[in-house]
Every structure is written in C-alpha cells, then in structure tokens.
Image (cartoon, rainbow, N blue to C red; front, top):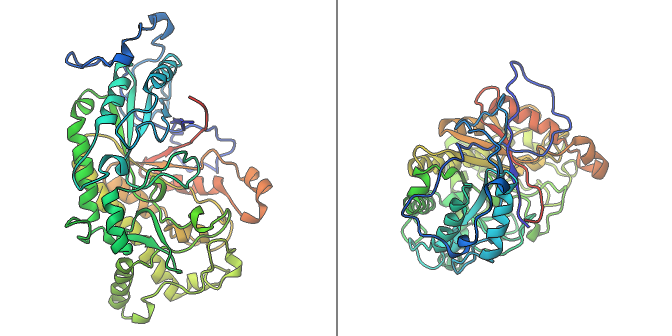
Length: 454
C-alpha cells in the first residue's frame, strides 16, 4: 500500500491558538498550476499509449494554485498521494508499471494534484561512488508527467525496512556498507556498541571516510546529479518540492528508538552518540568548557524501554537538569541542528529556486513529564523549562525550508485511552511547535500518512 500525503496549513491567527482538537488528517503541500503539458520532444511511454480517458472523465475541477506554501483563505488544498516505497526497484525498473498507470489515472480522475516519490540513495548509487542509475525514476516521472500530475520528491538517504509502513527492504548503497564493515563507526551507535545501519552518523559529516568524500559531499553530489538529470521537470514546474532526508526514517532525528534493537512504544529510547566520531566531538566540547570529565554520555539514562522515572538521568530532579546534563544535552541537540544546517545549505545550492522541506518527527510520548525523555534521546532538547524546537525552526527558516511535522492527526485523549502510562500529549506538542514555526517563521505544515490501497 502507498502512503498518501495530504497537505493543509492551518490559518494564521493574530495570537497563539490553544492546542488543536479533533484535527483532520491533512498535510500542507505547495503546488503551482496543473495546467502544464509535456514538452514536444517527450518520448511516449507505451503504457501511456492506452486510449486516453474522455475529458469528461477527468474534469479540471480545481482552479490554478498559488505557488506559495500558505493556502489559508484559498478555495482548495493541494493533495499529494505517496506512491509505494518500492515503486522503483533496485534494478532501476518501475514495478508493475502497467498496473501503476491505471492507478495514476484513477488518482487523476479523483482530482489529486500529484504524487510523492522516494528516490532511494541505496538504489541509485548502489554499487560504486558517483555512479547513479536514474533509469527507473526517469520512466516513472515520464509516466506521471504524461498524466499531468505533479511531483514531490524525497531525497532518501536512509535505508528502508524496519520502520512503520516499510513494506520493502532497501539498504544503504553496497559500497557504503562495505566501508561500514571495516569502519563500523560510520553508523550511529548505542551504549552497548550496537550499530544502527539505517543511516550514517552525523559525526562523519566532515570526515573523509567515504572513499575520499565526506558524508555531506556524498549527499550534495547525489542531489546535484538528480537536479541535472531531471532539469526539464524543474523547469516545467512538474517537480514542485524536494524533501531532504536528514536522519532516521528520513526525519531530522537520531535513530533513538529502533525496533530492530528491541525498542517498543512507549520506551524512552537510548542516546546514539557512541561512535568514535561523535565521541571525538563530545570530547572537544567538554575540553572547550574546561570540564574534561564531561566527555561522556550519561551512564544512568536507562535502556530503550525504560520509563523516565526509573532512571537517574530523566527522573524528576534528575541529572538531565544538572550542569553536566545541560552541557551534554546542549551538545547532543546542537549536533542535530548543525547537521541540518550543513545539508540544507548544500540542498539550497543544488536546488536553487525550488521549494525544499524537512520532515521532523513528532515524539509525543512522555511529553507530560518534566524531562520529555523520548524527545531528549531523539535529539530535541525540549524539557518542560526549555523550547527545543526554536533552534530547528530557525535553521529551517535560514535556508527557506518548510517544516513537515508528523503526529498532527493524533488526539491526546485517544493516546491516553490506549497507553495511559506513556504520558503522551501530541496536541500539546503540536501546539508548542506551532508557536515558532507558524507564528514567527511561517514554516509549519502537517504531514500525515494514511494507509490505503492504490
């Protein structure tokens, strides 16, 4: 099944609104007019040579869309449907292309504006550095353009498999995993030394450990190749937005709650900063503060499925709020912000003039406790006495990136009925994030995945 992504930014009130109640599962998406046709030199796809649908079957019901991201006050909200994660396989082929064309026609007839597609790093640059196979995506994008649909494309620099909704397995590029065999510190690592191969550690952002390139150089080369390869789709306005993957599950966060390492909801997760590159960064930060003894992650932060009140670090009055705890959490969250800053700077260079976005995970469990432990391990320094999302909103604003936020469709009451022990408050979290991202920076948008057959 695919994962539809529907977009709808809320109106911008003059003063902060109370926590949202009964939010419908919609998500905001920028889009320009659908009234664009394929260039005359386009080569017809045999699958699209089927008898065209009668114009009456595909009515042009929707008026032209403004290019801005704010759709408050407009008569319509753009709707994008997320295609299956494995729509293009590792051999560069569109899976079940003939069936897909029929499904895309149905979406077009339903008035959908476009589709969202993951471009998997593990498929495109699979075998050797800087050898990119865009063949499958070329055919897929051609099919979509011929049906006068738009595209939102995700630069997916993580592996697929193991997360909610992952129905295929797409590892990181083979040449990267080969490097990882001899140097496993390129991956995020937990306290027990377990490596998380879902994405690369942010500790190698500036380390030339990927056959002479740094991680951010690898990401930039990939994005630049995509921009050059699909130039006509940008120029024609077919590609309306690029979402930049910045971490686990394509989200800006540490992989702090991996199911493959035994995590279960509502566990607090674990810090993932034990690879030697992040440890080196931590040592430098501690030395700069004149406290070399602080060059360590906390040893009393529990395990993946711990409750915060049963740990010395996250409990009320715990070490998270000590001088050392504040130092560590500041460093930990700044690594996340710095990673976003570096990659988005290069994304803006690669996709100059195009809309870009970042997905941020809504870690809403344990929000009603003082420490907000699950957020802290994920990289959001957001205890009850600090706003941990303002620095993230600021760096996205700096690079003109929209913030796609998850969990907006969740209701606190529902969470309490199912998992009262989780002390979850998704509505409170959404309300908090909105304060900076909407009222100050106008960045916030809703990202909701609804599972449905295509």
